[in-house]
Length: 93
Image 1 (cartoon, rainbow, N blue to C red):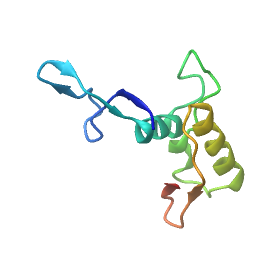
Image 2 (cartoon, helix red, strand yellow):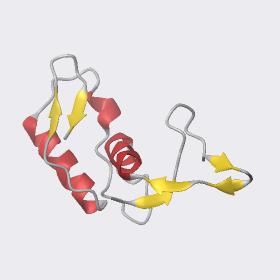
Image 3 (cartoon, rainbow, N blue to C red):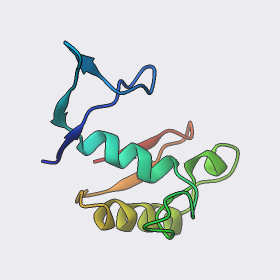
Image 4 (cartoon, rainbow, N blue to C red):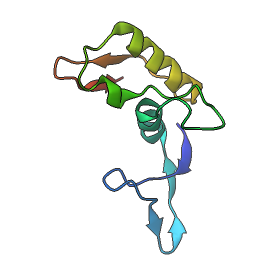
């Protein structure tokens, strides 16, 4: 379990409650950011970024899934499996 500043999933804005940032469980957030980011987007860790948006119109590869899983682990979230379903939906377990 990771604790951090929570981002509203629907708007992408920081969550604020009574004028204060909301702290909470952020594992799903970290996974989403790692998978959607492009390499070089995070200056501190330039190799993080699975570039999932590039996968939208292509055939999913097993190599991409393995690399995405490794990126999640590098961000501190251990996942059992990353896969791409027939409808190009990315599934993280």
